[in-house]
Structures are given as structure tokens and as C-alpha cells.
Image 1: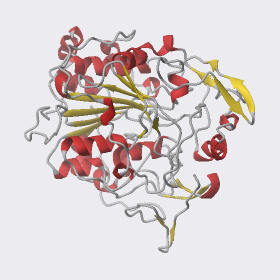
Image 2: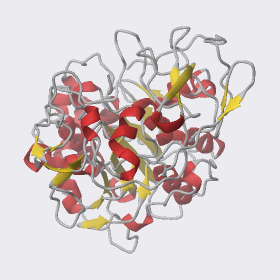
Image 3: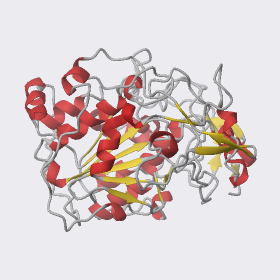
Length: 456
């Protein structure tokens, strides 16, 4: 297990990053804001344990949960729209055709282990959105990909673990990415409900406060443009701060980017976390450590898990192991004593450039963006249910706040739906039924690390 230790006291970049809400503070103090219109498995894992950390899953402080849910787990995958991953799912809103500048385009199938990536930047989103016409997705084509490559979906047979979980538990077909750009920003919304108006991934391959001097992350501009960037190190409040204030436990499992020693964690971009004790104790690498921690009886009250490149579902990674990676985590929890008190949220951080036919509503200058899938796995999730309630990524924070009696961060979590439509707490917890997967947890634990983060 390896943790990245920051060099305390460093000041980098040409900008001072303070707490951002709806403005960006630039050098010289000026402010700008730019609106736009818009079970055997557990025994195996115990045998593999031995490097689990000391944090007790029960925790010394009982969570002030207002429901039977005492543990919340967020598994964040990469770069898929609802139409791309759950096309034809019974009872869900998906499309077999799309629109390309006024012309109907049939959606074609594409393998999960696709070797081509797509443009999923904010400017590309703006073109795809096309003032609500949803007909500009040809703008996402990159390299040698067909101009209509975005108009594709993955057959259910290639992502069967996801479909199995969706069929058994709850699938939400109206969750929208909180922002319109790529992963750095999306992961900030996952932990904070905001991104300090940052709009794109950093110019370096390090996400946060330990990025090389001069690294920047673009800010959102008007009409689908980006503005000159700021150093990717912020100081706004996050869910971790709310949990710390209540004495509640949390962990963030992230891959180590081996060539750069970067953790590729959203908290790497939060100054007071990165330079504080939380970074040393609560941000864990490699991400596979979560499997041995669960087996050893260690599950924090709130857990975020992000994959490495090969298990991320990211287009272009030439891998089909993402669904098995997620299933291994779900199976580990399901075979553990935590099953009866856990809610697992499986989401995809951004649209990845793929077509989706549902027009997102406009809330502010950051989004929301297009739909991404959400699967809710829990003994208290409604069984075989498709929720048509409008959600957004920041609603994961809203659920945590309401479930554990925490205050609001006052960002997009304040207005996001709390995901309560996905649950029925009057249900008696059924015995867990393992999710079939081709790649076992043992294989995942012993695979050689890819050396790459979950996004490129």
C-alpha cells in the first residue's frame, strides 16, 4: 500500500486559489463568472488479507443515520452515457436512433474494449448539445474515428454484471452529470458539489496541489469556450470536512499513477486535505486495497472508490474488466457483515463523448451535463426498479447529508434530489446473491498494476 506524501508549505502556480463558489479569483483580485443559457468470495479475500489498515468499520462513533444505512459506498467509473450502456434496458428511457444536424442516425454497437477515445471536453459538450437540439455529437470524433462513432452503444452481453445489478436492484435513467466537462471536474462534484469554476482536466497529468509549477486547469467561459486556467489546488469545503467534523470515518481508494507518483484522487486538489492528516490516513492506494479491507472487517462510513485505467470502462483502454472490477467490490460487501447496512452507488463520472438523447435542464453555468447511468445496490434499494426521477451527481452528497444528519455544503448538493426514490426501508434485507463475473477478485488483487490512472 502506498500513499503520496506532500511537501508541506509549497506555493505553486501564478494564481491563489481560494474558496470558489460562482466566481474565479484571478491574479490581481478580479472576479469573473460566465453564465450560459441553458460469500465464498469473502473467505478467499480474508485469506488474502494482511495489509488492511487499522480503521474499524464499526467506528468508535455510531453514525447518526436516520435510516438503516450505516455505510455509503460510491464506485465511480468512467465516461459512459445512459444510451451507451443501458440501451434497450426494460422500462428505461433509451434510444435506438439519434440526430445528427437534422438527420436521423441509427445507433450501432461498439465493443466495451474499444481502442478509440472520444472528445469529452466542455467545448465538445457544447457542440453536441447544440442549444438543446442534441444533434452535434459528431464533434466528439477524434483521430481516425468515424464522424458518427459517438452514435454507438455497448451490447448488454459485454457488460452483463452491470445489467444483472440493475435488474436485481435499482437503475436510475434520469441522473445527469453535474458538470459538462471531463473527469477532473466531475470528481470534484463527486466530493464537493462544485469545482471552483474549473472546467477541464489539468494541463499536466497530476490532478492537484502537487502538480508541476505552471500547471493549470481551464475555467469555464461563455458559449462553450474555456478561459485561461488556474493552478489545480483549491480550498473549498468537501464531504470529507463534514464527516471529519462529526467524527465519522471516510476513505478514498484511488490508483497510483506510477510514473508520476500521483494518487489521482479528487482530494489531491483540495489544499487542506492534501497537506493535512486526512491525506496520510484516508486516501488509500492501490484501489484494490478496498477488497482486503472489506475482508478484514474494515469499511468506512463513507467510501469512494475509483478504478485504474484498465478497469475504468474508459473508451480506448482496450479492456473489458471494468464490470468485473465493480462486481468484485459488490460481491465482497455482499458476502460481509456490512451487507445489511450498506448502500452502494455505481455511477459513471462523465459522458465520455457518447450520444445521449435526453436534453439536460439548465441549472447554472456548469451544467448539468448529459445523462450517466446510476445503479443503486443495497438490501434497501427497490428491487427490479427503474427510477425516472431527475437526479445529478451531486445528489450522492445530498443522500449522505440527509442520511447521516450532516449540514449541506451549500453547493449543488443544496438543490439536488436526495435519491430517496431509489429506496424502500420497509423491506426486510434479502440474502445477498453474488453477481456473476468472469474475472475473480483474486485475479484483480494479483494483477500487475497498469501504472495509469482511471482517465488519460
